[in-house]
Image 1 (spheres, rainbow, N blue to C red):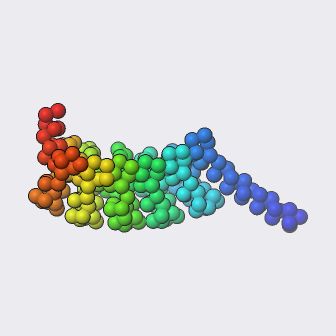
Image 2: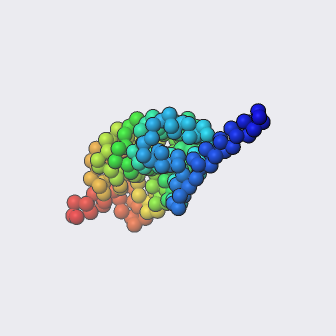
Image 3: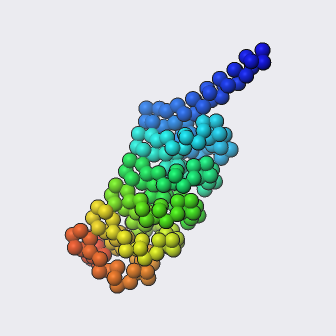
Length: 223
């Protein structure tokens, strides 16, 4: 009887794990869905405990991990902390099919905030900012500079970590700096932050078409 009880318990745990890891036609598992619907943190922790750490690295049909999902859907900082505590630096540096890491996702999310940015950078380090262009060649800073609705503190935090090297960084698709992006969107507060670090040297950098950030600003005024 004791042996039967042990077998039943083991089978039950295996069934629970299989249920959590079950994916739908879009490659989305139950943990992804729980995170996208803002399930309580204790439930998320339990699901990870049952399914194992490897579930954090499973991806849907767009290459998104559960961390991408949480960041894309405006997940709470408590939720993201749970995922990072379990997945660590490898998880935060993982890129999806369009090359976005979790910080790229946050920069596109309407609820992006400074605390979430700091949390992701604290785990991913400079590599998260400096070594991970997406498929459009953009760093997270490029993405932030295109968002006039975001507080400048987010760009300021990135610049605090990345410094002049990040400011002068040209994207790999069209050779644009973050200043090109900020000027093209009329993101004046961020323009000032970038110029404080990059100075005149930054304004003289041309993209692959030979256009400086001033060209981008002028084109915006004409439009």
